[in-house]
Length: 237
Image 1 (spheres, rainbow, N blue to C red):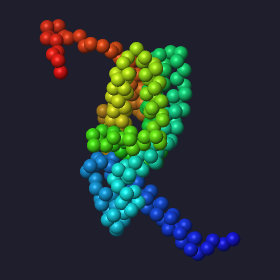
Image 2 (image 1 turned 90 degrees about the vertical axis):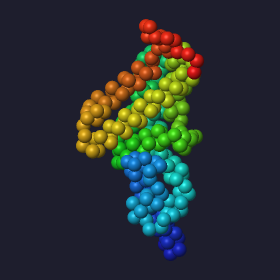
Image 3 (image 1 turned 120 degrees about the vertical axis):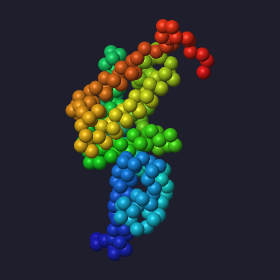
Image 4 (image 1 turned 120 degrees about the horizontal axis):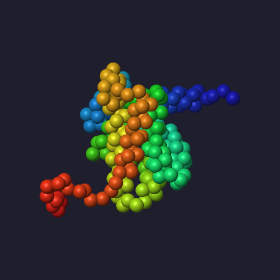
């Protein structure tokens, strides 16, 4: 049966709308990655995407927050699935091996993602999103593609059972910041042709070193800080 002319027009319009939406996500991801979330306006994104309608973002997404959510979600499912797969290797037999597997589950999905189209901008976008105090990043993906991070938290608390739960949560937050920042800084430098600092090492060595650092941070001793000799004890906060 031949497609009705009206149905064909609707389908064509829907396809064009989806194409514009994808273009807006691509452009917004790049601009947010390069300049920061607050430094880029919706009208700037529309203009950079060659859209004449000044309210094109509102039409396709509704708000800046919804646009951020769409960017985060586009690749997050693949990252989340890979993280869950890697966490399956944690078997409780050896503490250090399990910690390393948790660290790899946090890091490798992003490292592998760098080879994907647009991967570099995505990592830098996530770093901007995570570091912006005005945005609660994990609320944007809560209940959708965050099961891997939540499982990493549960597994870490089980491995580090001797530590207070808040201490484990704090350490996970710190290493997450380290991971995002290290990848973002590396990609920013390498995209500029600068092989210095975090961009100096070969990718495999960089990833391996980052995994080792995260394991060490998670497994660090916990307790009262011993004052330096001759130093007065710290007073109440």
